Image (cartoon, rainbow, N blue to C red):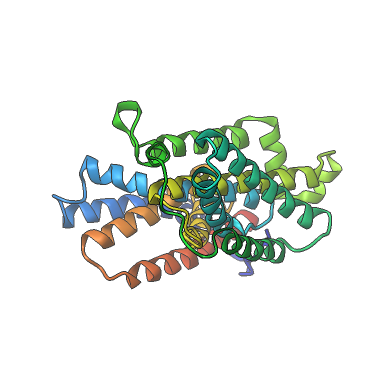
Length: 331
């Protein structure tokens, strides 16, 4: 990622200490303050187990796609294809089950493999052809939108979706917890362990921190970057599958809006606990802030446009906090 902080480096130690604390803990303080405020303003509707479960369930898909995006961003690239890819995967898995009569597990495996393939293509374009990741993934995402329309003719695939596929997202398993939450915990937990507790994770962070130094240290930078795109692609595919299961249909463009939400969560996460570094736990915190913010607005009957205003404001604030964190770390 390109470093964006340009402020003069003449901070006093006290100012640096205050700004450092603010940049690391502002998101967590904001999340706690938001939950407390909504609880006091709406004590019967907001602070309930059912509502918190609903928030986590609704946010689970955002967390999964954002967690995958986090890996791409950690290695120093951007993946703008994830929303379009998730939409295509939702249409594809529904079509394979309904039109091609494939067993549900087979259809899911095919779509997950397709997600990995799209991530591989993104990675190869960026690392081998040297196309900027913004341009490369935006171009691939646009192509995926075209493929989605070509496959479905722009018509949602609704009729004939089996109940077993719907239960993948709508069902509950361990202690009655919604499946989506359990899947989200497994994905985020697995990616956190990969990045924070394995030698491969150290290579991933090294490539994102300083690719030139990583290359001199013997790390195959291109391979690590491609891996980041592949993980991002698989998470986008899983999001599309779960969204199609939740909606009971394969709908073109259904997941496009996840792109902005995922980026907001990832950049908010980079301002959490660490000085401008991207990490999976931070992405979880960022996604929770967005989810509880939307939930509070809904409870208080705020108009729909306010959600877009909140999301855009969060993204701007997140990038600002992330830049501030990097500035503090470098000064």
